[in-house]
Amino acid sequence: MDRLKQIESFVSVATRGSLTAAAQAEGISPAVMGRRIDALEERLGVKLLLRSTRRLTLTHEGTAFLEDCQRLLVEFANAEASVTAGGVKASGHLRITAPAGFGRRHVAPLVPEFLALHPEVSLSLNLSDRVVDIAGEGYDCAVRVGDLPDSSLVSLRLADNRRLCVGAPAYLKRAGAPRSPADLARHACLVLSSDASQSRGWAFMIDGQLVHARPAGRLDCSDGQVLHDWCIAGLGLAWRSTWEVEADIAEGRLQTVLDEFAAPPNGIYAVFAQRKHLPLRVRLWIDFLKARYGNAAYWREASGRR
Image 1 (cartoon, one colour):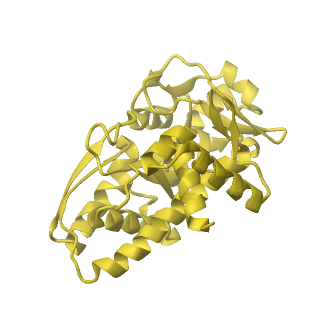
Image 2: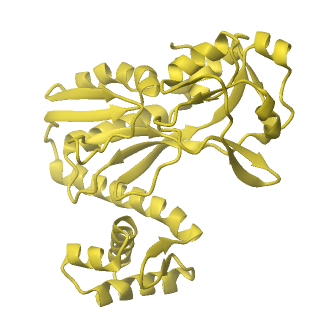
């Protein structure tokens, strides 16, 4: 059996959440789709999906394999498009969305360069900290930071994203530094409000396990930049990304705490609806971001940008 067909079938089943839905999309029977998944699992020697009469879930290996497969299929489609498109220029309107703080610093400043490279493309940028419904609201691509919810969307990891627990020197002098995540209960913590996209709380590694804490505080806000400003003003501790606070740490405005409990990095992703043929302008935008964010020099040069 064609290995690529097995991978395409696995991605279709995993993103749609059912053998029947994936089979209907391809015009085959669920039994045929099931045999493809069985053959893939047998070839790999691991279980990718747990199937019952009521639901289908990914195993740990299946979750990791899904991300790799989605990336492979995107790159395969890009390789084909680069040959078939030949000298065709990208054109048309590109609608993209990104989180407000990250978008201001690391998406909006790149737009003029992208448009200069592709003069026949126009672009609309939406900056919002809510999770935008890409397909329902007509967006071509989203930039998303952090853990991604399960969905039928395709994600491509562009770069790592590390978060740090930080506080202003004045606050730490007044309140002391926490020695463990449990100490956060006695600190003023500046948290994103419940309607913001950071839904799982602050992440720490404790005894080799990833643990999510949801500290409480007198202040919360739906805008990460406000939390950043409050933190610098000495109002409490915050859990922020390195791209946001790196320059503040280097210049002494903020200090890190709980470094020994730091969680592994999550990701910065390009997310888009699953399509058989991705428009050239969308593919070029994703390639453009991947080239910029994949370059360590970009982050060094941008660390002082506010």
